[in-house]
Image (spheres, rainbow, N blue to C red):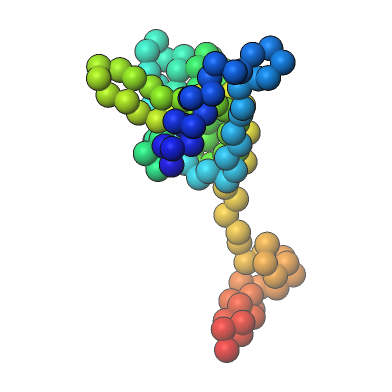
Length: 130
């Protein structure tokens, strides 16, 4: 909701050394590698979610290799603001911290153990729906 950004933008004049600008944390953001764009000289990345631009500055090639995977769940921490460019005003979250967990595909062995054969596991799995 852009009203949150407007509310905190009105308070910009009170953020100072003793009262830092508030940070926001969003958990379990699912994103795919192809949804992430490099901008400028490649040290800035961004993606869009729910009409908000999530942007991270100063990303080295090594950082990108380590932190960007094909399919991820992210927790991001950053500050909300407006990006104003060429008369357009877009809500954005400027990312300070980026924590990532790769998506793990669950197998029958994960659910039922490796002692069962796949056919037995499928049979046991189907019994859950009876």
